[in-house]
Amino acid sequence: MASAEFMSGNNLHNKMTGDFGEKMQALGFIQGVFDVYVSVTFCSPENVTAGQVSDMVKRYLDNNPSLRHKTAESLINQALKQAW
Image (tube, rainbow, N blue to C red; front, side, top):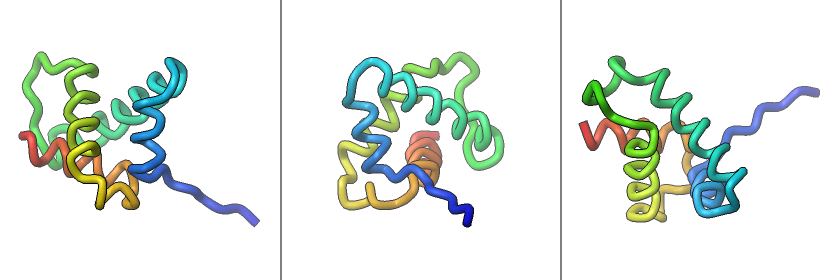
């Protein structure tokens, strides 16, 4: 039987504070979600960098530990909607 597992905010936060490889996985995941939602649910500045987006998401996760059980995708989207 096939099943799907979604990354939670807890998983993403752990990757963002892990070793280099985990940080790169987190950055790639965040950039993928950013690419899906940009101009759909938020409009970012033209020259925003992946590092800036990652920093904003990390700050959101740090400041909202009670929400980290939710999917990482929904938390990333919420963080970026809140910022822009």
